[in-house]
Structures are given as structure tokens and as C-alpha cells.
Image (cartoon, rainbow, N blue to C red; front, side):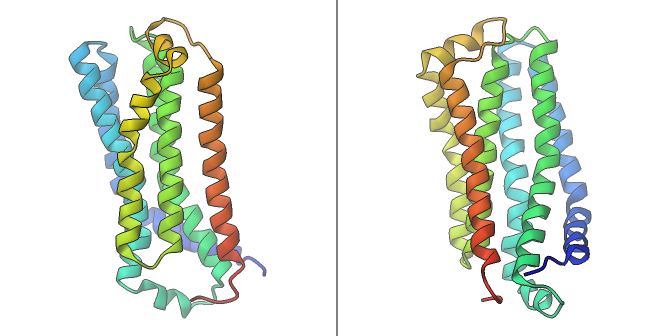
Length: 225
């Protein structure tokens, strides 16, 4: 099955143009959170960390809920089916569109977080810890996107988004129970430990595997269901 690249590009651009203002608001809120983090005070670190997590979770859920769940609810697929678009074109466009709208705030705020850790009085040991948090958000996004693309039920898609993001709390608690990770967050040096590398690599690879499996399954469909 040949991919209709011009049509895929058009659908991706459509999603980006629809969401760019909201994504700019997410980035702005994230920058405010980083300003709090950069103060390197206990209260400011708590406020900034909480704000940053909320912003990243909102950014991850926004594009999925808007471009997939809401469009499905409003039966936009019926219009898409009237276009010269194959299931492969549709799945690639939705995957690329969601990845783009998530990757922009994700990349900007990840870079901003790492720069804040290195350029402010915060311990440099938080560098690896921040990567582990962002890696989980990436994994939760991949799971949520995969479920939303695979099920017709709005309830299950919403459950996947909420469930995967809520689990970040026990994930953070679990990281705190690993001495090689928890103790390094308080030192003024970037230290890579085997547990940190293993968790980071696992989350990134699992994210790629989930999205790859979803794409492969949908691409094999000869027609829309």
C-alpha cells in the first residue's frame, strides 16, 4: 500500500494549525514553572515541579483528546473517508500530527528543564532525574495515543490517558526507593548509574515499540472499519 505523502502532510499541517495557539499556552505555562524552579528555594521548587508536571500531562493529553477522541465523537472520520485516503495514510497522519503537537512542547520544556538544572543553584544530580520523569511522560503519552487510536470507546481512551498519567505518582515514589537514583539527585554532579540508564532506555524503547506496533496493526487494514 503506497503512502499518499501530500495528503498526509496536509492532514498533519491541519492539526498543527488548529492546536498551535493552545500549545503556545502550554509552553508559556511551562516557562513560568521553570522560573519557579530556577529560584532554587524549597517552596519554589515544589510549586515549579508541580506546575511543570501539570503542564506536561496537559500537553500530552490535549492533542490526543482533541484530534482523536473529539473528532471521533463528532464523526469527522466520515468526512475523511470521502477523501482519497487509505487507512495507512490516516494512521500515519494522525500519528505524525499527534507526535508533532506533543514533541514541540515536550522538547522545549525538556531542554528548558535540563538547562535550568545546569545553570542555576539546583543540584546537577537532578539532570538524570529530570530525564527519567520526562521519559515516563513520553511512555504514558505513547500508551494513551496507542489506545486512543485502537479503540472506538471514548471512555476507554479517556481511562488510558488518566490512568497512565496518574501512575506518575507511584513511579516517582518508586524512583525514590532506589538509592543509586535518589541519592544522586542531591549531589552537584551529573551521575549516570546502571538503574537510571536501564529505566531510561526501557521507557524510550517501550514507547517506540508501542507506537510501532500500533502503526503496524492499523497499516495492515485494507479499509476503514
